[in-house]
Length: 400
Length: 226
Image (cartoon, rainbow over all chains, first blue to last red; front, side, top):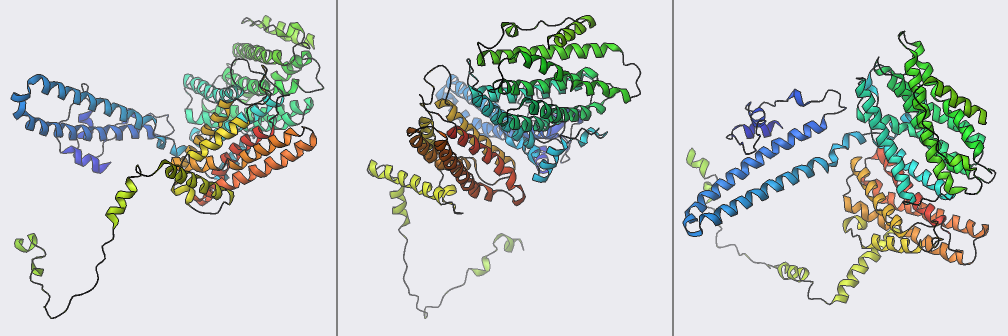
């Protein structure tokens, strides 16, 4: 980059863009590399994108300078023929030429920025030993380090785990005979897994951004991806060995461990990280796991009706959220009012009712005549009061 | 001084060979120019020869997959005819499952196509990002050609299923598919793993394993229409 700088510093002011305000900053300095700190994002895991863009801009300045020089030479040559060809032809050709050059520059800049896979290259810089140790660590809910930079940000492990989950879900859906009316099995599996991974990561990053936690998008992607390892193992085992008890034990154990690990890792990063985001994380993770496992479990031979499934699922659904609720007690803050608790419970039930609706739709297609009509109705969204919370919990317990 | 600098070889201008020494020998001019013209103008050759040459290249690569040695024939002249042929054959063989009714007993043609091609693209991107030296199309070529054992296994499975679909036939199919899956994975890693640094071979092998596992599982769970 230093060489480019010194080459560009001797040229005249190449202000061909209408908003060429950055040109002077970059080309001045006569050989010294000026890094504009304003453009650097402090919370980004790596500034490769910024460096890449700066490098792109510098290359473009040179290209523009070269083209300007070239066209100026051409102009001096063609100026003599102006009288013969007429002004209109000459001007039209020049304008068309410039438009073509500008368009080509824009397209190549966009292509180099977005289709350049070298941007992703540092995130794949891992060793097999590291991947294995991270997989095992994802199951250990240790209260992590105080430095957010120590959370590994890599994309290889999470990407492979997402594809493994897609394969396992596909296998489960095929063997349980799930029918997807609007779409294909493959599309559903890929959409679910990638949507979960990218969507929930963005959501957690957004929450962290709201509470000013120092965690980057890459770190949330990586954390959530590795957290899928527990769910993968559970689904793999229980799709092949159809014991309800085994499923629940494994699900609680491994799924709960990996979600606890995620919560405890993101939790101490900011002192104001609210409880409801932890709970939401836990609920969403558990939701997806169960919604994937639900159809498989319910379609086994020994299972005659889906009614006990709902209630037996609803109760353990609350269990993984409890450790998250208990976590802040060892903090010294005393302003933990009941409001976050209420909100978290309501969000919890909101997500639970949502996933029940989704899974009931899936089961609808599996076991038509066996299901009682009551289960096909979506549950109402509870209002934001404590009474409603207790009422619904009571109804669930009664229905067991 | 400047004179010498501007003409560095000025001192050699008066080197000469005395006329007593005979200079003799043979000079053979390679007839490269005319041969190059012939190679470029393959328009003049009959169509049959063109097709046969391409078919021979494809067949040669099939043989390299059958006996996976560490040769670079697959890598040097890559082509995508073989993978396309295999992909279409496999997708056609996987048709005609119990897909006549509303429920999907077998994967549709497009699903198989998408799985194979997008899976190959993702494995290629992954191996490039991990620092591999293989190019994009070379990797696609290798992965596509190594589907051949699974296509053969699919044909065998269809023949076995004609006889019935009991546990015996399932056992036979399981053995055949497992063997061909292992063969495919071994053959493709013989080509791909060489292009990676030594300590990262496992990272490249795993997605290949997953890819062929999914295809093998699709082959194994295929059930014909009743």
